[in-house]
Amino acid sequence: MKIAFTASGDGWEAKIDPRFGRTDYILVYDEDTETLSCTDNRDIQQVAHGAGPKTSQLIFDLAPDILITGNGPGGNAAAILSQMNLKIYVGAGGMSIREAYQAYQNNQLKEGV
Image 1 (cartoon, rainbow, N blue to C red):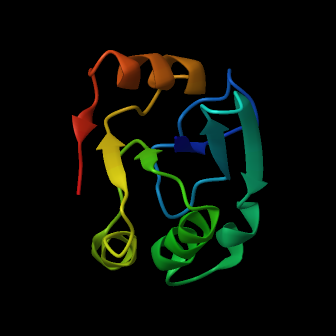
Image 2: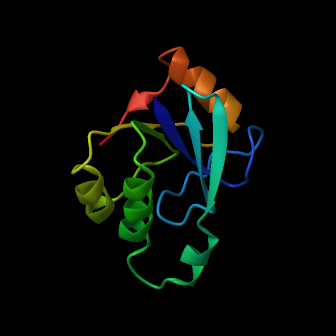
């Protein structure tokens, strides 16, 4: 299973970025291979409109099974993500990636959109 996180940094100790569309990084943890990969999304800061759908497209391309984020995607972004077989969990803002993963494993995050 692949789990994507919106993140402010590029490792396990990075914080969950509560902003979905303008997240700096998207980290993907592959539970099968136990690897954590990082995709840089900082160029989204230059986008005036449509950041959420652009980030959604990037997540779509990464093809995770689960997304863990802070506040969750807005309407247009959620519409794109709804085309995937993706479970979204929200409420992880302020946690490290490691803490958010543990919260997910312990069923402590709220299922979103």
